[in-house]
Image (cartoon, rainbow, N blue to C red; front, side, top):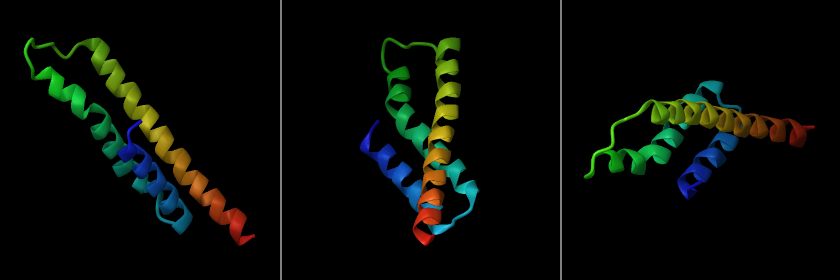
Length: 87
């Protein structure tokens, strides 16, 4: 994971702790997916060109699902921390 992804996940924990809405998971998932695939997309444009295969589509879809799970887990951890600290 890159540092940007850790910052996004820490931000999601902060949103959960602050009591923010759950829909913040969607932009966090999109941001994590973009940061993870930024270099991969750049390599697709370089010579020799590699076609976007079914295997890469599968990796993309599974990556989006895992990013959503991580963002949701961090959000829930923030909610749990708020619940524990408020007694």
